[in-house]
Length: 113
Image (spheres, rainbow, N blue to C red):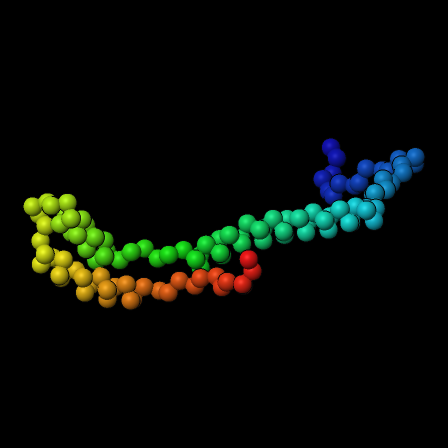
C-alpha cells in the first residue's frame, strides 16, 4: 500500500515547449479604445433625451383644476348637475395650486432663423 502524502507533479516531458502568449498588436489596442469610446458615446446619447425631457416636461395639472374643468364642462353642456357654487369654490383653489407648481425651464432662443 502506498503511503499517503503530498502528490508530486507529473514530470514535464523533455520535448515540452511552453506556449507563448500572443501579444496584442498595436492595432488591437486601438480597436479596444475605439470600442470603449463607442460604448461611451452610445451611453451619453441615450442619457441626453432623458435629461432634456426632465426639464421641459410640464407638470401635471392640479386636481382642483381638473375638478374645475369638469364642473365647467357640465355647465357648458347644460347638464342638470351643474352647480355654480362648486365652480366658485374651485376657482380660487385652482389658482392657488397653479402658483405652487414648479416652474418649467424652457430652452432659450438663440436667435437663429
